[in-house]
Image 1 (cartoon, one colour):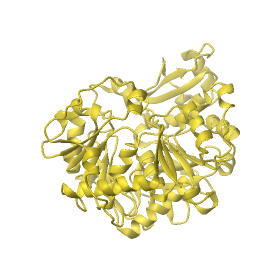
Image 2 (cartoon, one colour; image 1 turned 90 degrees about the vertical axis):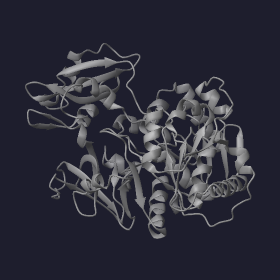
Image 3 (cartoon, helix red, strand yellow; image 1 turned 60 degrees about the vertical axis):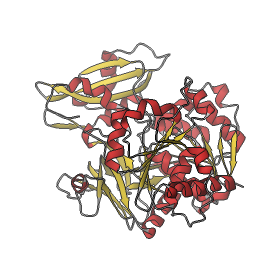
Image 4 (cartoon, helix red, strand yellow; image 1 turned 180 degrees about the vertical axis):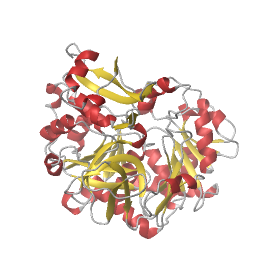
Length: 515
């Protein structure tokens, strides 16, 4: 029988379902109805999924909120989304209280001991402000709501807001559209017939559930009936231990996790039995080809990849064999999904030519930005297709290759330069652990190429001169960084994405261009 595991706590599926049904009754009692919304500001734990599932069973939507944000950001998202209730961990409440309006019903979830230990949290005042309700005892006072649940809970994700305030992405779906999205998720996470039925599947939530991919993965796998282990925070050796002890079959990961796994000493990597793994998929960020080859060599041809965006869903997929035959690809569109490469006027480009990626999943419904429909219309370079801001090309066999983000492209002296191409070359350089390439102001050329490099601990002597010398054989001369700096630790979001804006922003302060 499937179960939800969190540290030493193991919740049989029947008990977890009972919690969800009681939670639905509790939310209904405070007026949550179809079309309403709740927000969740919590770290990874079962109550996160419980709240989303309960809201979904009422036809309400859930807004996951990054718990790293400040009170002002919280206030903006709560007001912009129009939610009427907030679930929040007890240790976060005091610092966020000023961002919560009086009309928001506050449900306080006691921060679990495992999270306190994992994040080394100090003791906090257990008293609650007026209007706040301790969640667990409140929920347990209600009967089970035996009501046919929605196919999947409706989630509204707020984009990272690289230009101004973040925007809420909401899909416009009925039952038919939800069924199509459920099929896309089944393909994404390896729940199709050849990989086993849901009841035989055991998986791990490895990333933060406020982020789109781990959230979708956790909700889908629980709804499908798989056994799910929730990690409060990613730890490479702990993941290996869980794989062995829980006989994990499926994983959803991001590339930085692969990198951290490969950094473990060989004796640690070799002492765990990973033979249960059948389907390991990654997405959300680019992966260095050398890292992927090492993972395939270690775990075998169980490594899969998908590419998509919050605004449209996952649109291309590839397995290990396809990737090895087309190194660097993020996959190929399956039947029912269309991917085009177009120029800025919406004209389709031929195979091998770089342009903006636009895509659609047939029958999956439309999306909108809450309160910002004009931004939604601006994304439609081709009628019915959504562009999520990535540049790339299709090869002759239809496999998609990502070149860069549109906003990250450098225009130097009128020439388009794709930082990802330079970063891919740098990742092959001995001693380089990570890197970021972006454009900085240049009086003569408008922009020039700047590289920030993180070295491996045992790296040989690497200087700006040796970097340029190495790149001379890897990329055209106009792509070589004009300036190079070295950092001990490049900033990343908890989802694993490189936080390039933090590196780039100081160079553009006081300039007209927005980052």
